[in-house]
Length: 516
Image 1 (cartoon, rainbow, N blue to C red):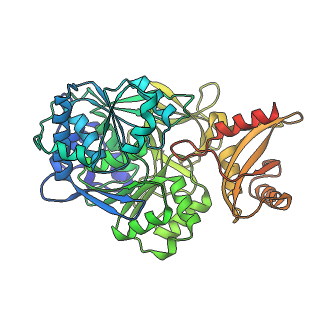
Image 2: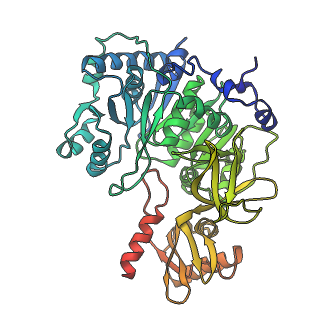
């Protein structure tokens, strides 16, 4: 029977996909399955690299499937010796490293629940999440242990060289025995420390559902050399960047430390990666670095997620890597629902689009009354799940060919003098100015029009009235005479979510304070 991984075309995806075929990609079944076994233990033959960690400082670290299997088994035995049981939570705040993979997979081998935490969280952010998930342990490094220890009561384990050496006394093999529906991972979405997002709770069988996005959103196939520079504390970096490719036995690249665009570009060359999935911000930073022309690339598939990519950056990526960059759209809560089928020669990637629904998926754009919108009309995107329509809280539209286009978050809509405008479209137009590095657009109160557009601009030159007029004229020409930022403020840095997206909510809060 032909595996789903043998098909690469869009037509075959529609013709041959089924839930039953997804399960054929795994050793486990609907009753018993373990993520650590599927991702690591079943791929230990030989010394194939599982992970190449690209460190910001210039060092590369290769970890084999066998090494991670043995390390994680020893950690599972160590946890059991500490009295940790199935269902207990273990928080892990580490950069990609030997210790990170040992602890994440070892926790799941035991049947405990791994809770990855972003390493740039401060004490308040860590405390809120630990108070919410009540883990038995927090595994982190020395620096972070010192930072968070005064504010938390959770037992802290420092994963230093001495700790790793101590694990050597435990057996290098461990046989998991988890139910498919047992909880495996708690994933926190990005948010401010004052507004704690609820943890999304994933079972071991989530790895099966994840394969839909892996096959058609990032185009993963055995034999790829795949890299995702997103932090594994977030859904993209953990599920799409780590678990999905490892489950297919693919060698992955991970990025550790402060992101540097040229460091990533060099790694693409040095390790001959053939597939990359990154945030739109990563591509934008690669473009702004000016270093792309110094290296050679071997990429066959490129994709992005997290937020829409502006047209200038998309053009840069295609010119640099020789492939159109493919969108993969979804949320941590609902998963991936729209893709552009990287590697499918019979699928046309439309600039600016989110692609089309995953095989077997049903997505529509609805108006305020819950009725489907005709092509070209903006509404809220919804996905059909469990016999009902589930709102994504994102705006969008379709075209005559069935492609979806993003219109921004529902709360990012700007209504001025009766005109409905998209912050995403305005930002894309502003970014076409050669001196603009980044931009965030929001609606601010106006006594005449209700709202007007204000653009916060990070630029390569000093901001003044003349520069602001250049930006306004450019947007008028690109969009329309009414759809432009009437207010332009030049700032040194835009507020970002921990996942690297422009935080328009903070911009709105800041402006509200200024207005009041």
